[in-house]
Image (tube, rainbow, N blue to C red; front, top):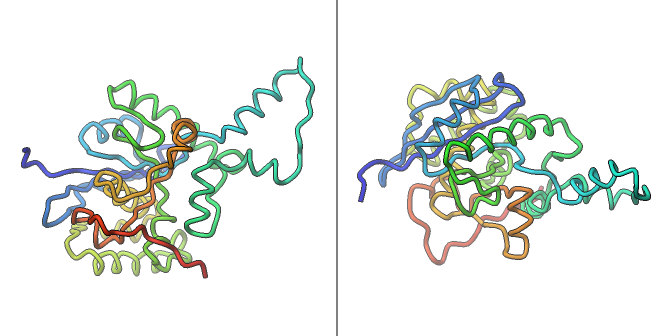
Length: 265
């Protein structure tokens, strides 16, 4: 058995290098250490990092809703009748993936829609990145069951941990309180010289949370897609939600462990 530590990485992906952050965490049975936290990261840096980790969590949708893809193809085919439903219930099937519906059940709110919000631009970059990762020899399974890459959602992870995150994306003082909470809940996690950057940059903070969520995937402490949704998740992507609190990520899961639940307030 190798004595080398497990490593996980997290990426807060933006449409451009500016706004993209990369975090790298090394894990041993006794502790974890934030080895790297970098801003303005390009696809080559992400691909290099992915080659040396057990899991890399990317904060971006890995695909589009099946219904949306079918609608766009049908809409472009002028040889057939154009009869879309157009009503709200139908539009929601185009806007949200199966994993988005799962997240809403867990935390009581919808993720941003990859079909209708500006994150679609970032998802286009992500599609290219996933292709580069696959071309580098890595297994890319959008459902997260196999391979190195998993889709993550830092905001949902923090809510499942029952952290008060209102305003954290815009207010450095809120992020400072969250960094202190992180150090309190996980005293084994050494942030090193990077703690202040997590306060200064939302992108850096989210990249660290993405790397923590990737750890949950690496040790099996998350809920994979139900078998009935597996094929859809392989096309649309599946968001990894940790099934344990931050403080438990260092230890192996127990058979009696129950998934986290979020209390909607």
